[in-house]
Length: 76
Image (tube, rainbow, N blue to C red; front, side, top):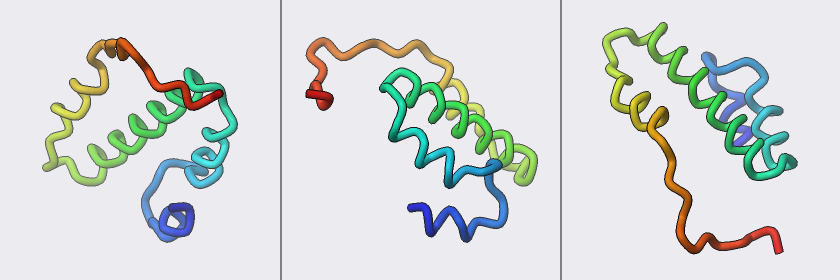
């Protein structure tokens, strides 16, 4: 993934390192930082490709998340 990101001409600032760092964060912080990167990416898309409609993606990202009833604990 990181090698692919390095080839992108247009991307959020320092995205390669930021994605690497996410794997060292606690789950909630990792989620929040991933969301920030996604929002920055959508901002870039809106700026570079204004003809694309990202409103559906934005509405899904802004909707409330319902915790899973029986989540898998991968941190054991």
